[in-house]
Amino acid sequence: IKPGDRVIPLANDIGGTWCTEQDFPIRQLYKVPPNINDERAATLRINPGTALRMLEDYTACGDLVVQSAANGQVGVAVSELGRAMGRE
Image 1: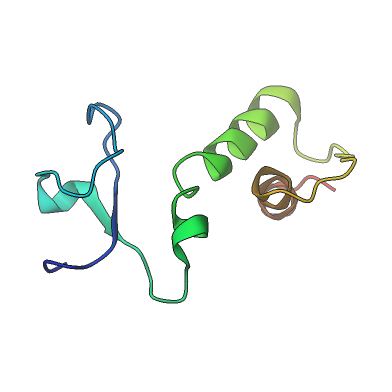
Image 2: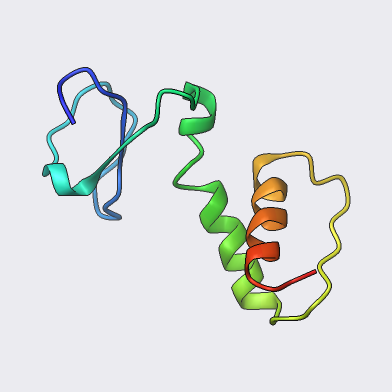
């Protein structure tokens, strides 16, 4: 990671991320790959975690998960994570 790289803070107690500059220990940062646009990168800490929480709290391995109109990033994450976790 170097100055100018797009990064996402990994720590939960960071005091907010709505800024253009902030100091973090490098071990608390994830470098955003160049093939991920800003809009998608902005959702990386929220949407996959929401999907994972839904799957872990409300389903078990082997369960059938049905989604209606899952066209957002949480819906995509539920599909991808659910498949990886053994949900159908």
